[in-house]
Image (cartoon, rainbow, N blue to C red):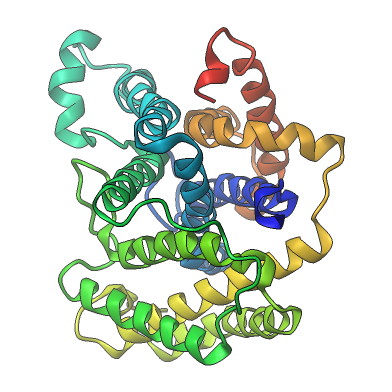
Length: 377
């Protein structure tokens, strides 16, 4: 059956999204459009607007898309392994990296990089000062691994209390029509707006490092991924539907600047973050429609044009997960090492991206050669 074969285009999407995460975080460094380990000074207006545009577009869809394609493989894995072995696999593949990064890599990195001058040994700093400002679990980008683990545990529970093993994925099942997709986007937009009445963008549940303003989308797309596997949606997507939503995505990306200008974000972007403002509703609707249109459009593009793998992609695919885990300290140290290089921030971002991305994949390949890492990474 097609859905059980290796879907190269999904592997390739994972590599694309991983690289995009690195570029996104480096853009935060140089355009100052969010919170990151290291930011470089004041930026000019072109840099700030370009960085905000780039990061807003990414934020609208890339982590939700990551969860969708991750969820796509969850039902089949559970079917093959059963609850016990599936749980063990999730705890090894997700739990071990989560714990190592949250309680070893990130604390050591923050201690050495940010607190070089404090007169406090690490064994005192870690249980005291570190946890006053950092998450208990899910530090840095590993919030995604934490969320995926929790969602997977929720799926196990659902399978245990529901009927016995579901049927195999349907060979033929119609992809949702454009009207259904639009209604779902409206639902996501209004759900996000409601959450942001209490928790605007920027609000973070620090103990778990969860930004709840985005979680309506994350939960919904994880569920969509589960359904997509059973109904074979990734292969059932009609080309005309893919082309239609790809055009919508391009249009929405172009509409971002008129939207923020009309909403007064040049002088005050606060109404876009949440609360009872039309700008907040417009922002969440823009995000939800762009999210679904980008997911559908990229599935169409990758399935049609990038459904094979040469030597380079075959190297990148198995290393993408490790790159995601290690990239935060790597790109931060690289950025800090060239802090005295005088370049326009956007040029510096482009140049460092071309260096940092290969470095991260090379380091991943070395790490994965260590004993027992094949069981985790």
